[in-house]
Length: 262
Ligand code: SF4
Image 1 (cartoon, rainbow, N blue to C red):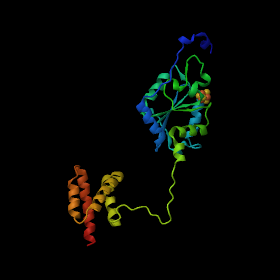
Image 2 (cartoon, rainbow, N blue to C red):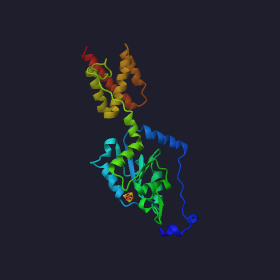
Image 3 (spheres, rainbow, N blue to C red):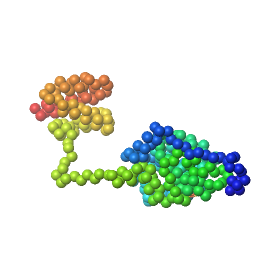
Image 4 (cartoon, rainbow, N blue to C red):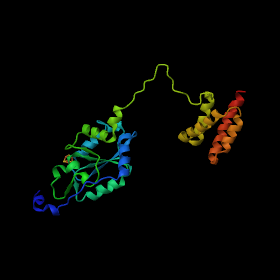
């Protein structure tokens, strides 16, 4: 406080707000409004009293449980979608703060958290304090408070993600009483479908096996009269010998059913 009065303004550091270039701003706008998956947040403390951290942790742990909105904590900025900056920017934490920002992939959202993160808070006139997070990086959402409560935190994060807007425009679908989900490969007998899928999953693993079985069954559905010719051509068109091997095995399963059904 004393130094502020004694040092002339021209000699004091005058940071300017950082602006985003157009491309990153557009990508960020998409992330803001269209994100429909879990998001990872990384917390970066630049020089607070730890009060904000306590509130953030109570937001993401079981009582307030921000995970129910798909908001998860991550230990590395490399995986972060949201960077939360708490505490005032100080001389010694400015560079780590910038490094964390640079380490997070674009487009990322930046939240200035707490009075310190927004403006420097009670430390704003300290000799080593540069101010809020927006003095070194572009900030998207400010969550004020000293510290902000978990409810405020969840509200701020929801704002950041456009979750509120998504909720307002959400569509609810209610099934009619006799409505059935459409069956895939309805014309192929149930037993054949199940056995082909099981065999594909046994050979190629649960996820990939399902994809291979779907491809095989889709081709089978399209085969009109000449099943043998269509499937042989399909297998021959594969350029991966592992796929050829699996499809051959699936074709054997199909043929064994055809023989046993007469
Ligand atoms: S905003 Fe308040 S609680 Fe948060 S770091 Fe600053 S002084 Fe501590």
